Length: 226
Image 1 (cartoon, rainbow, N blue to C red):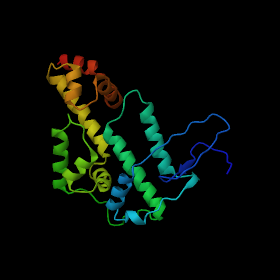
Image 2 (image 1 turned 180 degrees about the vertical axis):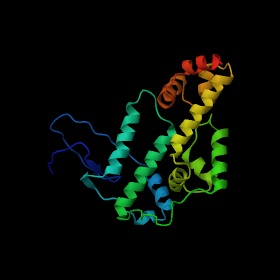
Image 3 (image 1 turned 45 degrees about the vertical axis):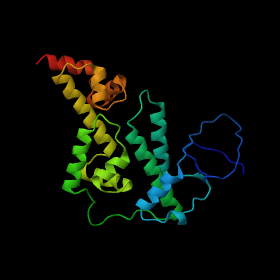
Image 4 (image 1 turned 60 degrees about the vertical axis):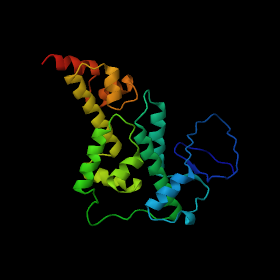
């Protein structure tokens, strides 16, 4: 086939499918690959039989959700400092959900009985776990296990319960913890970054500037004035 590509065109190519293409002009393509084990796990979380879900080759698909996920991945790849790994896990999980939905032709029905949420106990146990493990690389599977829900359900339940996506909540708690350490201790900035779970000092600084509008230096100077 011969076609004209436009920004936002999506090709879905199942694993193991042979093919080749030739471009008439320079172009940029973002290629996202998902491991079959992720699709199988998400299908199980959704109550679907992974063996009966068939991803068919589709070209020049238009899907706002898949495009949004792709743009988020692209932005993270091009960022000066990487996002929390938890964010990429959530994007991969969301992409797997969308592919399975489109393959089976089944999309989530609207909930007319109120939004499902974590129980008070589940939320308390989960947030306490996050607080005591901010210095660690928090994994989506670990958080789901602590809450006693599937990885796919965790994303929806946590947002409904707190009003914030789980990765944004974790980042905010890292920032708040780092700010508290700066105001109450004489730890080096590099030590605070590691204690709060940031990849490095510059990652902490850029995140604080984005969320608080202040640099670590400004926060320390402000604390010393009191």
